[in-house]
Length: 534
Image 1 (cartoon, rainbow, N blue to C red):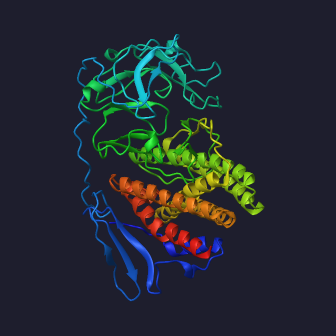
Image 2: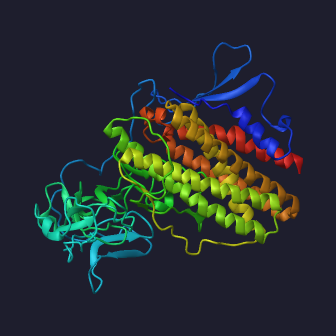
Image 3: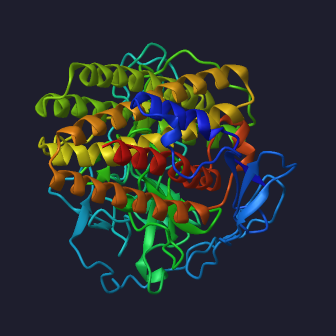
C-alpha cells in the first residue's frame, strides 16, 4: 500500500503564515484531526482515503471509491489497461498504401535532413500530435555527415573510414548533442540505412530529420507504417534523454495522450508497462507555459549544467530509469528558470511591490541550481554528461495585463508549484541515501517558498482588483483545480514504480495521491482563507 508520508499541516501553516493569515482560518479541520494519509492505487485497486484522529489506534476509512488498480508496495498485482493494437511481435510487411488521414487538423510532413531540395521522410505529424509513418521512404542521406573534429581524443574512430563494421558508417562526436568539444571527448561510429531492407528484423530505417533524430539509423519497431495499425497510427516514441524518435508502436484505445500538447510533462511516449501511450512521469516545479502548453528544452549531452552531488549506487537497469527520470525533472527545472524570468517582467509591468520582484529574482536563481542538481544526478546515473538544449521561447512573453498575469500565476504557482512542493517534500522523506535526501530537502524548501511567492502575488493583485477581476480570478482557480483533477485521474491509471521511491522518485500513483491531498488540504483551504480575508 502506497502511503503519503508528508505531514500536510506544517505546509498549510507555512502558506497561511506567508499570507499573514491565521491558521485557524483553514476550513474543514477540527481540533481532533491530524493530517490525512492516503492509500493510493493499492494492489487491491481500491483507493482508500484514511484519516487518523485523536485517540484512535488506526486509520478510519472515509472514502472507499474504487479506481483502476496499479502496482503497490505491498506486492499487489498490477492491472494494466488492455490493448488491441499494440504488439511486441516483429513487424509484418506493409502494403505501402497510405491509409485515410487520422487527423482533422494540419498534417506536417517531416523533411529529411542533409538533403537538398527538401524531401519527405515518410514521417508526418498532425498538429503537434504523435509522429507517425504513413509510408516508407528511401533515406537519401543514409550516411550522416561526420561531426568528429580533427582534435578529438582517440576513440572508436576519427574519420568515416574507421567505421566499416556495417554499411553507411560515419564517425560522430559522442558529445555532438552539446555541440562543444570538451577535453577528453571522443568519437564513435554510427551506422545508417537507406531503406527498411537494410535493417534487422524488428527494425525500420528512420531518416535523420527535425524531431526524428540527428542520424539516419535503424530503430526498433513493432509496426512499419500506419497500415499495420488498423484504425490507428504507427507512432514513433521519443526518448526522454535524447532528441528524436527511437521505436514504433501502434496507438491504442487506452492511450492517455495523443501528443505532447496533452501532457503537463511532455513528451507523450509509449509506455511498455501499460502498453499504451502516456505522458512522461515527471512534473515541473513551475511549468513554462506558452499558449497554455508546457514547454521544455530537449536534452543534450553536455557537462556545463552539472552541480556537485553524490548519487546512491544502483544496478544498471535501475540506473537507466533514474537517468531518464532526473533528466526530465532537470528539463522541467530548467524551464522554470524561463517562467520566473517572464514573471519578473510581468511583476514590473503591473507595478508589483519590490519584495515580490526580489522574491522572483531569488526564485530564478534557485531554479538554476535545481536544474544543475537534477542534471548532475541524471549524468551520474547515465554515466555521461546531460543537460538542456535550446529552449523554444518564441512568442513566450505573452500578455502583461493584470488579468493575464494573475491567471498565469494561479495556474503555475498557486496550483502547479504548491503541488510540486509537496512532491519534493515526499521525495526527500522517501530517499534512503542521506546525501540525496539533503539535496531533495533543499529543493523542497525552495519550492515551498516559490509557491508562497505566487500566493502572495495573488493576494496583492486581488487587493488591487475590481469585482469583475476577482470573479475572473475565481474562474481561473476553478479551471486550474479541475485540470489538476483530470491529471490525477490519468495518473491513477498508470503503473507504479515503487522500487524507485527510495531513490527519491515520485511515480504516477504516488503523484496522484499527493496531488489529490494537496488540492484538498493545501490549495482549496488557502484559496478559501484568501476569500474569507478579502
